[in-house]
Image 1: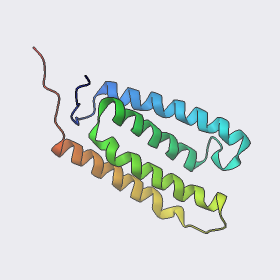
Image 2: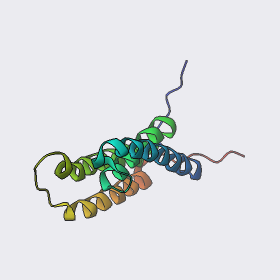
Image 3: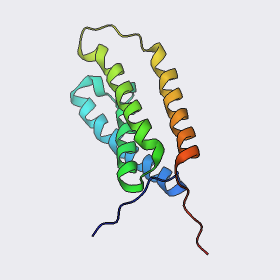
Length: 122
């Protein structure tokens, strides 16, 4: 029987896991970008989607609280950057990066304030 894991704060291992998952996702999305240009390796949407996938993987494995908030922020921002490449819609993306930064800072502040810190073992 699987034990329910509570949300917790980031640890160096969780951050390394997020980086590894994000890099793997970025590599796969970049391969897709070879055939579908809007997801080329250096596009903001590819990078943001990879970060969102890393957050989803980190949430599923480590239950880091900020990933539950940051992941959807990255996903929505990725779609906003993808819109002008897919549809003939003009979107001003100059306000997206500040909103992403604010969303991530708020997520870390909420994690710092409300998430349970792992207890040290003797």
